[in-house]
Length: 156
Length: 153
Figure 1: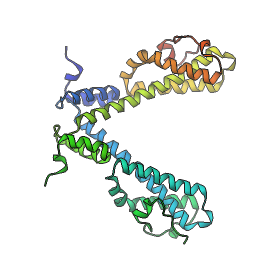
Figure 2 (figure 1 turned 60 degrees about the vertical axis):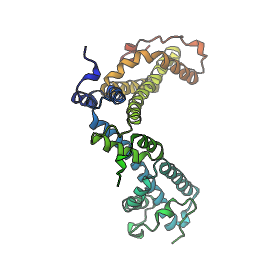
Figure 3 (figure 1 turned 120 degrees about the horizontal axis):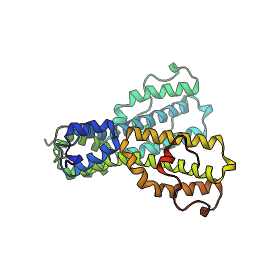
């Protein structure tokens, strides 16, 4: 009898859509047995890559929340609250953990900053009701300041 | 200069703990270029397997809540409420959705039932305040009854 693992790679690829659970078990078995020619390598590569992308997306979202709160701290000093400083601390702790697990993501914090800044401004305008032109056109904080546990901007 | 991808598999395995994001990028590339001998195959297999286990855990969790509510319906009939019946319907829909996407999970329902039944009893004890020995030692419902959208004890 032909074993399920002997099926051709193209059939393993069909399985990816038809029965993901079975696909994970067979793919793991094929990899461990070194039978790469039978394995659905393209989907396996995609899944591995997606795990990294999910981490990156989570990091970006944390940076946006953090920078959004630093902006509010700077522009609305009268409304500073425990809740704001708690959000800032929490996001920094989580980002620190992400960067400890994946130090290479630090580069992405730098390269992704313009994009994350734009989204942080959108978050902050929605939350404060302030006009978006009250916010600096470019991020007024450096990556080091954003990640520094001690840094809080002065009121403007 | 030696490319990062040329490093032996043992170094790619270190990377798994030292820089997970970089590990995902490199190994995806190694797989796509067919350089399996350089790839960290053991960790890749583990990660792929874990993805399936997540679906299995989701199934177990639906089943636990579902069976706990069926038990409550049977042993506290005076307290039956639309909320309980709604929970039962929602959990059944969740199971149906998982089984549609991952048909082979169906094979796990029967063997996992004793374990999930144990958790379901624990949940029912917490929710109802009834003693544990108030509930049957073995699941009084068949798999077919548990999944049947019409069945209520």
